Image 1 (tube, rainbow, N blue to C red):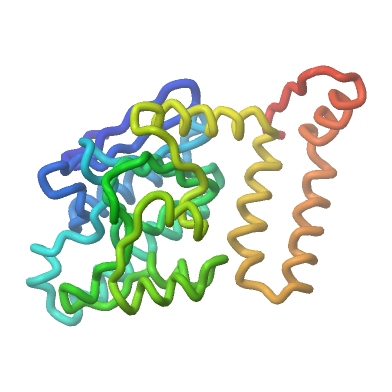
Image 2: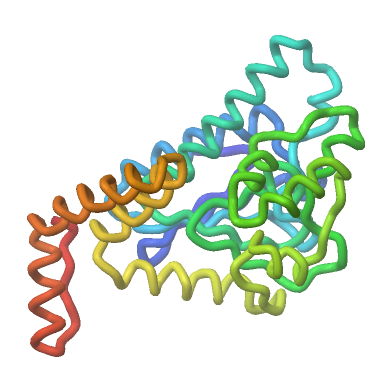
Length: 259
């Protein structure tokens, strides 16, 4: 499968997707979104891939939101379709069944600020690199920005949405928008190490944990706890759980097989 706007490589069960439009600060146009859709569909079905890292090409930007040149020409119907398609791709990333991590190597605006679960590692870039600037172009906040308002920083998210404010990596870390801030030269190595640590765990347990977080956040507490218990019951019937508990008691490394 070939791509015009993405770079895709896989090593040690970790796939790296690089948005490759550095001249546009890796802004997302329709063509790039379509390629991302194909790439994530392919990776979801690939048993050789256990985790995905998303990053941007160059040193200036991770993803600078939507491509303004394309947004400027959208009709009402086209705008709705574009927004729905972007929402679909973000949802696919969160429900991939495999961890999707973001190596945020520069400006992360709009959809770029909505990095996927379970972790977002950011380099120490120039100040004011992450935010929600859609109002400045006369557009409304997108799925990325609304998702932040449902997370653990709703008040701060609403302030950023309404003002279009951008924040630096330190503030993004303080409010929980990124999970780690590291020197730029260490960014990819640290993100790959985090992906590797997740891959050392039982793949079925990781999948269920991602599922519980993604769906449980939308449920009332009682329903979320019941959903967690249902997932736990499925794991109790798995070979992986039997191997994991046995390995723990025998003080050895577990040999998980995803069954």
